[in-house]
Amino acid sequence: MQSHKAHKIDFKVAYPCPCRRKGQLTPIALTDAFGCDRCQQIFVVQDNGFVLEQLSTNYPYKRTWRWTGHQWVVARSGLGRDYLPIVLVSVFVVGFLVLLLILQSPLSANMAFRVFAAAIVLSVMLGLMLWLACRR
Image (cartoon, rainbow, N blue to C red; front, side, top):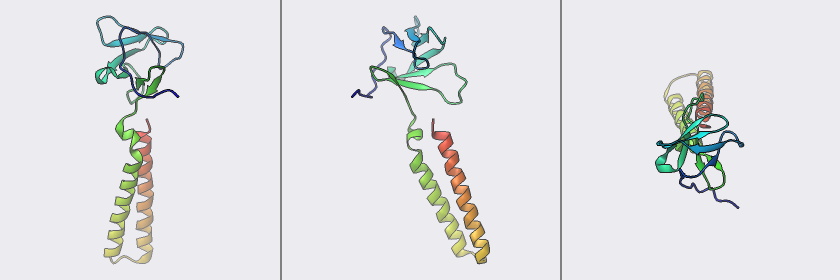
């Protein structure tokens, strides 16, 4: 089984392109960058030589990879990995606040149910938005 531990990127070595499997990354002279001979993309080395970042992209988020010694692995941000606890905490906080409002207000039962249902729908929408924002 191969290790997924990141290796430092060496500027003297040609790597396979992370975008296309047939392309080769070659170092660009006098820079901390690589260029692909197939897709013509430029990649910059970041994070003390452990992360390769695509320089020009149409994606809203920067695409980054780590070299494992055999292949490129997508480098994810810390928020992207930990979105589930953020969603759960936000749902519980909103639910708790809504329960406090329902218990302390003289609303009728029907109105309290509507407020509680609206809060649940908003919590689900918030969780979905966080998931969509952090899934990359």
